[in-house]
Image 1 (cartoon, one colour):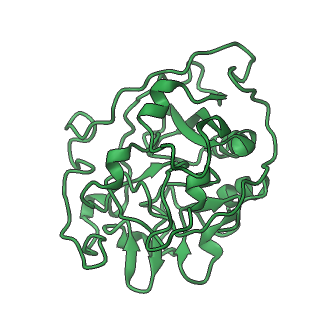
Image 2 (tube, rainbow, N blue to C red):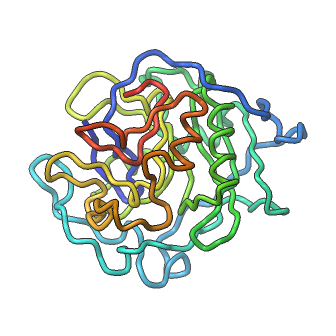
Amino acid sequence: MVVLATASLAACSAEVSGAPATAATAGTTAGTTSTGVPQQAPVPSQPTTSSARNPVWQVGAHPLPRRSDGFGEIEPTPPILVNRSLPTEDVLPPPPDGRYAATVQPIPAEVLARSTWQAACPVTSTALRYLTMSFWGFDGRAHTGEMIVNASAAQGVTKAFGQLFAARFPLEEMRVTRPDELTAPPTGDGNSTSAFVCRPVRGQTNWSAHAYGLAVDVNPFCNPYTKGSLVLPELASAYVDRSNVRPGMILAGDSTVRAFASIGWRWGGSWTSPKDRMHFTATGE
């Protein structure tokens, strides 16, 4: 089951999580850059919906009427988002040489404070890691994103995103989900690639794989969740047609699926129902 789709689609996947699993390793180490140089966690600016970010479509600025199940009404995809290619706002310094770089470290206090972690979560904060990783935007430029994952998955996740970078697979945004996004009015236009979100599966008491830091949602708008007539994000219906291939989409057997398969993670797009095309998980759920 899924939770409310907010502007960032903070909790759009449907999955149930078990105990943390171990992912494959990569060449980054805790508390250092990929070259081994000690680094303090950067402090990104807050995302904005100003016209400077996108003069045509302001992400998160158009609340949808709510359905009885709490989701937003499913509406046609706005023409500007049918072939989505919005620019990326830099919240962290981009890689200076245009090459892939990743860092892994314990979560800094500032980052933890603006995340969805709380004492009731199924993992301690010390069991999580803060990552920074390079990615290509739809604007054709290299950017740096941030993510929180389970410590057991940190090296594998940096490896998988390194493969996505090598394949020049575009991401619109990669940042830590804020707590206010879990209760924000649904806007149905979020497209942030993210991992850790401390929440139960909607309508159930068991925690989601995201609450363990063992699941990643990649370009949610380009890879919507569907179950019956439900589409999440709610404005992403144009991307349900997978025969109309556009940048940022994940397709069976492509470089993105192979990248996560190489670290032992499964793809929700291979499920029968629901189809969770954005979702990769270490637990299979």
